[in-house]
Image (cartoon, rainbow, N blue to C red):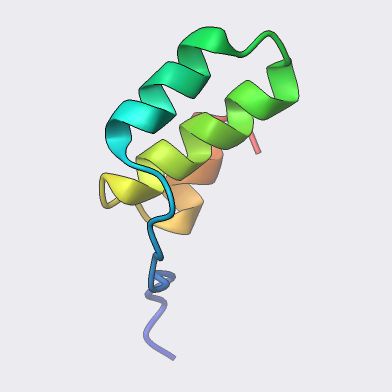
Length: 55
């Protein structure tokens, strides 16, 4: 086992859409999920993206 935790990411939202949703969000859980997705889109591993949102 190589330890690589990267998965293929299917992008359903543009970065602009993510930024807009983040700016509009008032729900803490939704904000964390959007940050997680944004980090994955930027190339973070699952572990790194989870760490960024405290999971």
